[in-house]
Each structure stands twice: as C-alpha cells, then as structure tokens.
Length: 102
Image (cartoon, rainbow, N blue to C red; front, side, top):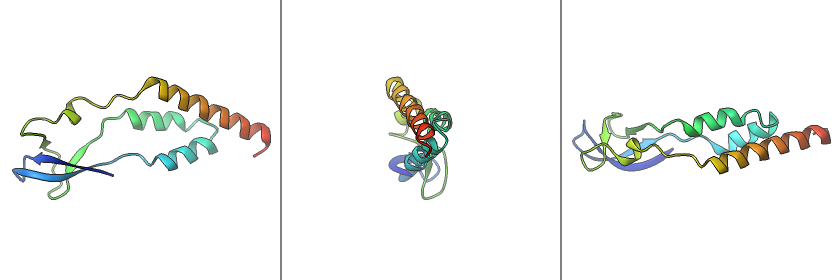
C-alpha cells in the first residue's frame, strides 16, 4: 500500500491518502509456478489505474492543490519494453522449469 498526501475534499484539508499496489513478490511466484501464464493477470493489474482514498475518512474525493491530482489524471503508463522483457523472462523460466522436471 502506497501513501501520499492529497487534499481530501470531504475533510477539507490535506490528509494522508492510501493507494493499493499489487504484491510483486506474490505475482512473480505465481508467474513462475504457472510457467508465465500468470503474467497476463499481473500485466492487467499493473495497467489498471490506482485508486486513492483518504486514510482518515475513507473518501475517494481527493485532489492535489484543490484540483484533481496529476497522479490521478495522468495514469502512470507502463513501459512496454519492461513488460515485454518480463513476459519473455516468465515464459523462459516456465519452459526451463518444464524441461528440467521442476
């Protein structure tokens, strides 16, 4: 879980806000166990925009500098090269495990 300070429109002040992130260790292990097939699920979760909420009141009506935050407006774009390398690495590890009998 990531934390960052945003302006909560319900509390009417800056508050600590939380955003969920996927467990990369868990998804890496699942990708290895499934021979790279789980990478598809992991990729979908990485491309999904992150939802932030106020840690105090739970409101999702948050903004930065009394406007919609750049972190929400401009969804973080995944690097396609990194995604491709991850997919290929997962497939290679899956084949290696399959051929080695592991």
